[in-house]
Length: 434
Image (cartoon, rainbow, N blue to C red; front, side, top):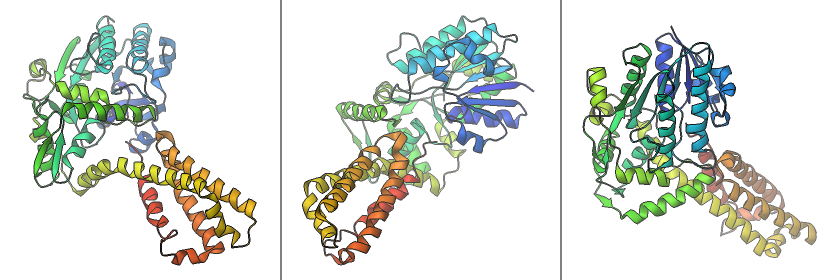
């Protein structure tokens, strides 16, 4: 059995590979930026939390690569943003890893998970940085293979697979910007099978292959198949939206990317979708002696239950929940500052001095604004949501002691805070993206 290092081992593709390797009896080590969840999901592997984008030299990679018989690079990100620098993540760090393999005592087999269309002169940074690393690997002299899967469909929902579920779950209509764009999909099982074949020597060294179903299909058909798979009724119509909407949505999602949100609607995703996901399965069929599963076959092999519908609709509604809570708390704080004297009367009526009452109101308004702003910054979202719950509880307890009559106020200043607090608590349970 081989000692296998899986870079990006807790991602959509990486974790599926890790599971298969463990089932086959291999010794597995996985690394990624935050592997804490992976340690819970797959305790049979050894996990290291490492920001691989900071490993820029061969020497920095040696503690992870030196004892490996096989290295699988399943790391990557769609677009640069607050959490990701594609040049560092997909090019500099990976070429350093390849150098460490070349200089090591044992020359490991190297399997690179790339993407169709990856090339040093591609239009998009995602494909350019993947292509640069691919080219470096070709010239390395290692025992290598480069695998380029199409749009990977898996039971886990992340990135493109989450986006398809979200689009399919829209009530009444299906809004699409590029409904006719061809999309070639691939089952995660087929990707993993090729990786295992490469480890076992059934894929010749120096092989480069696209892994994709035989025939791409229009995006509208792909979304329709997902909708049927989830057990949802056919939409009344498909809204064919103009391309400028994709640019607007992509721009907004890019701004959210700078705040740490890895939205599948960022501009790179929109641009890739405008051209489609197209690949050539010829080499795959020659090497594996079979065709990849079609999308209907892939979906038939993935049981769809009520949790699929729950996830899809929550993925659709979660951004609206965060935006609503942010606006609600910021507006509450701004109104508190504008009406500080009026708000302070509730405290002065309870016997608190005017200066202290106004200071308490101003402090509360400031906290409201901070929480409303913090909830849109991805690293702070869960603490901010729980902070909203805690602050609301403290407001209600203090208010009940100082001015209990507000519970019966016809405008309901106390009663109306309860639904917002419950929404914040519910949202805090859905923050985790993997």
